[in-house]
Amino acid sequence: MTNNANRLTIRAPESGDGETGAGQATGTDEGPGKLERIIAGQLRRYRTANGLSSAELAARTGLSKAMISKIETASTSCSLTTLQRLADGLKIPVTALFRGADTDRDATFTKNGQGSLTIRSGTQHGHEYRVLGTLKGRTDALEPTLVTLTNASDVFPLFQHPGTEFIYMLTGRMVYGHGAYEYAMEAGDSLLLDGEGPHGPLELLELPIRFLAISAR
Image: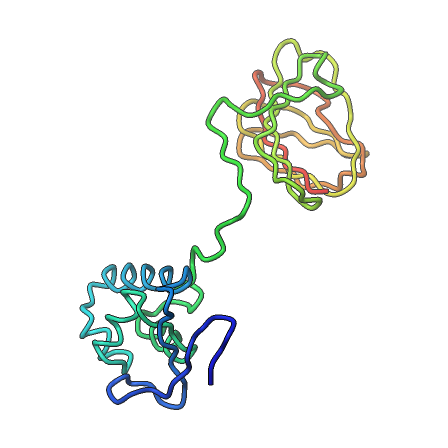
């Protein structure tokens, strides 16, 4: 049977492949594809990390040494049965062999002391808000913000917003309010709250104060 879309020919396993009851795809005329190369690299990495030779992995999986070599050189495509045998032999999830296949994902890396400063209602009163990262086009993305309060922080505006917010104290001590409740917070303390309730610092007890505020809308 020929798969015209991928130009792969599905054949029955030849003697020595170690496959039973599952077809094996040969390589294409165009050379190995991206997925074959990723599987090849991951297989080599996990095999060597486990201190296994090709022959030892072959013995564990019931595949031939030649088949292991073909997979690691991306000269053949694996059936699902083969992938499962390899994963079982290496004691890893099958998905580990595909790691890196879906690489186009957004990420933001922020070095210490960096991040974009934003203007909020407390900025004019000495509060510093430094956004540590955003993801493009994500309406459900988290917004991590590093908040710094110093001697210049003389007014404490309250905030309300949809979603939830997580606060983790890094340095200093303060009383933080949420609705009718007050929480004395110091380094290592955390608070998870409903953003619809009015919230914000009420009293600064030990300066400087730095805390990480992560909101999810």
